[in-house]
Image 1 (cartoon, one colour):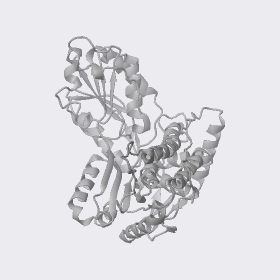
Image 2 (cartoon, rainbow, N blue to C red):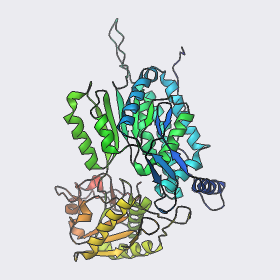
Image 3 (cartoon, one colour):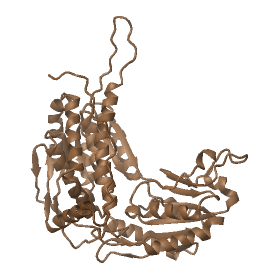
Image 4 (cartoon, rainbow, N blue to C red):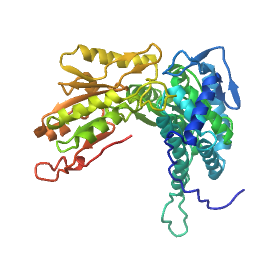
Amino acid sequence: MSTGFYKIPTPVNEPVYDYAPGTPERAALKEALKELKAMQVEVPLYIGGEQIKTDHKKRMFPPHDHEHTLGYYYEGDADHVQQAIDSALGAKHAWENMAWEQRASIFLKAADLMAGPYRYRLNAATMLGQSKTAYQAEIDAVCEMVDFLRFNVMYMAEIYGEQPPISASGVWNRLEQRPLEGFIFAITPFNFTAIAGNLPTSAAMMGNVVVWKPAETQVYSASLLMQIFREAGLPDGVINLINVDGPLAGEVIFHHADFAGLHFTGSTKVFKQLWQTIGNNIDTYRSYPRIVGETGGKDFIIAHPSAHARALATAIIRGAFEFQGQKCSAASRVYVPGNLWDEVKSYLIEDVRNIKMGSVEDFSNFMTAVISEAAFDRIAGYIDRAKEDPLVEVIAGGGHDKSTGYFVQPTILQAQDPKYTTMCEEIFGPVVTIYVYQPERYEETLGTGRPDLSVCPHRRGILARQVCHRAGHSKAAPRCRQLLYQR
């Protein structure tokens, strides 16, 4: 038995490579893309120590080139869900009794593998499977995932170190952190490989066992993450990756007595449904399941009349169109004062005209395809309905084509109604709607007591050069400081 008060390596943010022309990093990533594209892989279900292949398999393909086949993944059924649960519970005793520093070392090793020998392969898998550009893949699949693992180990040590400061005479007060009484169900989204890896590992790091269901459109890179976790030394059964239809998996999991927690990132609608299901089944469980979730929203930018027009236009373009607007933090509605609108509009039209869109293999492209045909059809529907509405003007973009890939042009709409559909509903695509307000109505537009900006606020951007401390602007003051760009 080891003894000691261990101090973990101090984490620092993983450096971001820019993959500039002529750099060795660019050459290495290009080679990884070429290698992965030339092969077809088979993705099994990872349950315990087994890699299970079933009679049902589905094709994986790049959203930007849907005729190309990356490989196939095997789809499981209810029996496989139950098998994954049994495997997790079977691994629970040994895993939760493993010394915390030993658990930590596994995930630190995984971080080193991702930052080192698997860096370009993990980025390439994310680029091909989820249609991310090199930069968007780099800041997600490698840098953010590595940061999650290293910083989470630090947070784990801090949690374990939080002990009662005072003990009475003859008493030693101690706090012991225990894993949950059962298994965790991790449901992860398509848009961030890092989130897909973080949701199961953050729970497992604390001694929990996990059944992990990645999004169907992210299975390609999820499988590589699982391979890295196993190579880093993760014991069999601690994390079990299942490729199973969501409602089918939920039917088994949410009726299981040992269900102990949900770790979720996805849509608000689905999260509410899951929460309600868990509540309806509360008498089934041995304990009270913990529910942790992050959902989408309707993020906005509001510009003060003193804002810099060029900075505002850049914030709109980057906030709305990076990764085709498929981020929960993407800017999808913007409130621009009338005194700035003509100048901002001219910049936006020019910028959209210069945006390149196409394959991820062309590193000069700023945008690629949206994730699936279903997403394409939904986004195109919003655009087409806007074109027919006399109260909406298409300022830029508006085109879409799915003949070779699911491409939607970066689209900017101007709505005369601040509660127009695209100002209120989450689209999750490269569409941003502008509402031009009168400069003297800034505070009213800001949303004090009004629902305009509180439909589903998740993150907000407020641009201004003037901090509003003067009389008559006291309510707006905390919200007027300059914010140029956020991820």
